[in-house]
Length: 143
Image (tube, rainbow, N blue to C red; front, side):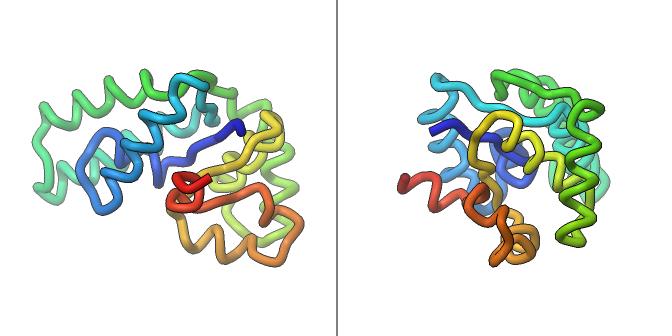
């Protein structure tokens, strides 16, 4: 199975948070097979890291190291500009933010499954035609 990851999973690869151990196990298992994401992932993870510095949770050096490492984790980055129209269609259909739907559009483009820890998004997609294309991290680990 091929996977696309979103920022909710990827941030746990570079900073310690709840579910970091599971996220790192998933990365260890799936990275040799190749992981994909929209290029937005780098900016989203870096923004989370910036917020953690502002809140005093990590220091500048940790933030800079996280920013360096996040670009090395995913095998295939898809340009957001190429996914944007489809992501906007999905967002309008399910009434959910476009930036989250970029990950789902990427999963469609890759014929892959989106792995997320974003409970709000997975709840929003439940019962839609997209629900089969999204799994939470714990389900991906047991697959």
